[in-house]
Length: 170
Image (cartoon, rainbow, N blue to C red; front, side):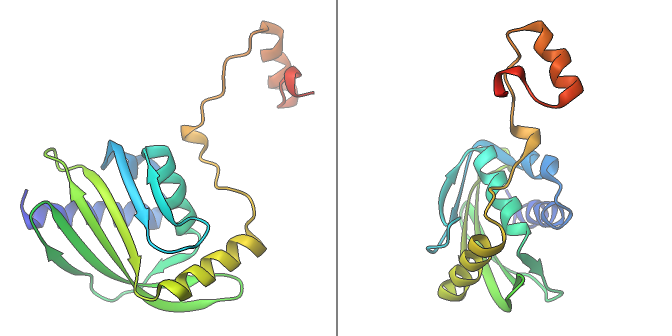
């Protein structure tokens, strides 16, 4: 795969991230995608599979705002690193830093793995951790990826339609 193709995949992913277009993001990744977020914030660590990766990306989207600065790319064998200047924004914080995003690709040009490393990991962890703890205690819900089991009782469907709740949850 050429450098231009990889940069194009990144551009599509970046636009989808900004627009919170989960469907496009999921089309760009492998079924066994892995995202690793460096650091010690509550969302740091390795996240495997489209649902886990989507949850982290959507959570990051609450706090990460891209700047107008040009993106810098470095290319290697099956990898590409994008150096992206961002603002980490919350109710108590607004700080600028660079995110180093290293992508690995499979043979079909899909993203196989992403490693995100903030230029200031301590500050990143502090801001994200504080915002999550104080202002955003609920996990990100991704309704498109959550499949509810079919009700065993056919009358439960009618009950759910009128009340929004299952009889089993009453």
